[in-house]
Length: 64
Image: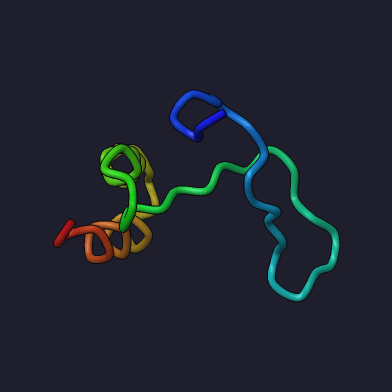
């Protein structure tokens, strides 16, 4: 089955820095490959109260 038809599935294993136990319930966004990821990151930046994080996100995706 192609990725476009699979829906939500486990594709990546995510770890916190300096830890060996994988995190669960994570969703990886790759804005360099997915226009929907850019839209999601813009929405997150607009919704977060963490202004420095929002600015970092806008700086990261600004050219995408």
